[in-house]
Length: 348
Image (tube, rainbow, N blue to C red; front, side):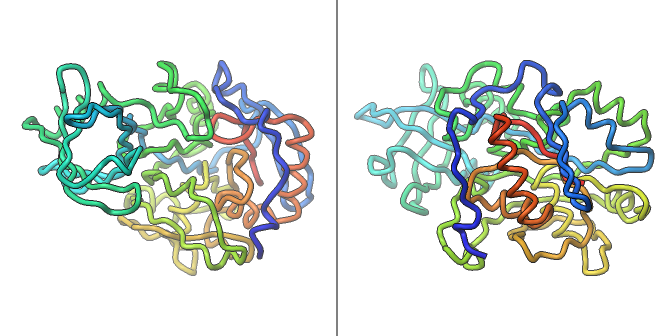
């Protein structure tokens, strides 16, 4: 398929820059693949579509405050550092993006916080904006993480054109987040509340966790017109033996619902051609677009995604290109909110 087939006219007024006051009161579009029926609900109504014996798969990754602001030595120039990935915990080596990159060279030192609470040295160039930093910090990994929590800001996506606010630290995070490592939230899960999850548990809906640490690659645009030529980013993920055991006991009369494209990618990476889920740690660069044969997932909860994005391509593969195209047209007509803090879609 062609990239142009996944483009659509989008009014930026529909971009959600803030979350709804209550997580479970965002809007919900329910799309039925078999009949083509499209329903308009409130997210808390999701409990009406799940039943005893269904399995809900959730990504328990936790967003950490990955955006730091500091100053360059001598000149005092203001520098933004975006922490991407820890390379070595003992040496405090990190893969980062810097802005403005032209000012940051190997050997430069960067200072963060009052009284230079944290200092980093640039030791390598990786890409035009990429650098490897060594943080000059003598404390433990736990103490280092505490400093990052104090100095860092919530890494809202660049298309939300405002600075992170205090409330974002809680709201740009799922209520079940427990494994720090993501620089972007698994946004489909942002709609769940503790009470809603407890209600689902009381209904007999099993809740199983996987981990995929969402990276900035999730926002990387597809540039090739023939989407098969797109090089998908790789992300680290984990699926435990306990979770695999539950998933492999699937009842064909029950639903296996992945919350978000991240969970879908984990499960489809771990599943073999027979649909058996194999536990383990994976580096997944699976690229799912129309024509893909799903090996395990049979229901998907997701948000509304950017035009031309790999996320939209995955959703189109699962829901069917024409039906998802229709659903997005209705979402725009009905003024649904889009992207990270936007409304939700349940595809059955």
